[in-house]
Length: 156
Length: 156
Length: 111
Length: 111
Ligand SMILES: Nc1ncnc2c1ncn2[C@@H]1O[C@H](COP(=O)(O)OP(=O)(O)O)[C@@H](O)[C@H]1O
Ligand SMILES: Nc1ncnc2c1ncn2[C@@H]1O[C@H](COP(=O)(O)OP(=O)(O)O)[C@@H](O)[C@H]1O
Image (cartoon, rainbow over all chains, first blue to last red):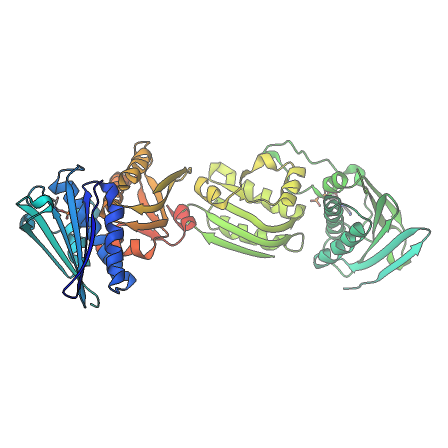
């Protein structure tokens, strides 16, 4: 497990970062990391929980889909808060991800027709106020890495 | 409910008496009466319980069988203790009772062959050290009344 | 004495609190009969709150057990029997006639 | 996370304590599969000790429910769901797919 924890106070914004290897056992740590960030920016318990679960789903998806399973590859999580919101970025250097083709889960289907899985993206979108995927420079300055940005407003 | 409670200290023996009508709601009271007597003569909780249950069974039988059900008729209970035992007498003026003809319950029978009831006398005999039935003078000095004597030793 | 019945899909759970003697046993008998007359023959009897039981209570138990086990359609299971009540069941030779559990959950799960 | 199973005559009771995420869900999955592979399809899942559940846990729930309800041979009943876990179930649209009870006893009695 690789871990770097950087906190910086710049331009009235509070930034912290953690870098973890793509292991499910690191979920505990990335959750704790974002929970602390959410609590410190004064979010209510229910909002903190939403952030925690959304990041868990995102981190799990990167391991499962971007890296095709657990590996030594890295995932970088950055939290940046300002007056009214928390911005969370997750970066990885796995398979490029384009969310457009991914179907919505059918939440009204009966048991037989219900798919197993396919809930992670739905959770992230429901729990956070903004969710967007893009390419960016990832950890180690490698190019063509995935960048996921999720924003949660304190009061909404 | 008729009640007389007489306590007398005679010849180093401690005697107390209660007279109750033949009602099942008086079971609580007759039990309490003998429990107190048993506790006061220093019996262990398990022995006190044996006395309590035996008297309950005897009192119930008198109502059920000697008096043919609940009635205004009386049942007299006398406790007499000495150094090593408690002697309990129950008197009634109902139908004369001869226990000789009463069959033993078959405790080893399977469910289908098991009788419903028929356990009261068995309980009394198992719980007390001596159980004997006879005729005697009952409450109100009427003649030909049933007298049941049960003895429990303190240590046995 | 107080008797309560909870009707589950799998069984009825009877809970009694207090002393069961000739005075109160009829109340237990009525509760048991209400169940069997309803065509239900799987009964869990939670005795944890029963401080005392004379043969009048045992009479109800055995007669309900007979009704329930007829044609293998059910049974009365006893749960959480206090020591004094167990002693009375034992004196009556009833222990082999009933399935007995230490917990109501085990009784309800296994009936 | 800790998972325990109690096998009753009528059903299996699964109890989990801790957090169910992608790291720990496989453990829950194994416990559920051990039951269904044993030919038993009535499962009560006591969630009272589950502090947290991500979609990885829900995946196990839905796949076990599919296995259990096949041919009407059983079902997974959920008991004592903490609010946070309920919220996740609700977000997933799972609430109508499970029978839910507030008490384990009710679940075991009614499965
Ligand atoms: N970070 C990612 N990288 C690559 N593919 C992804 C990523 N996240 C999601 N996907 C794709 O989107 C699909 C839906 O994802 P999700 O809603 O989380 O459900 P699940 O992970 O259970 O399949 C996944 O099956 C996968 O094909
Ligand atoms: N005090 C009594 N007076 C008259 N008959 C009695 C008395 N006690 C017992 N009997 C008779 O003995 C039988 C057995 O009594 P018992 O063992 O207490 O069982 P049960 O009262 O359940 O029948 C009774 O059915 C009754 O015929």
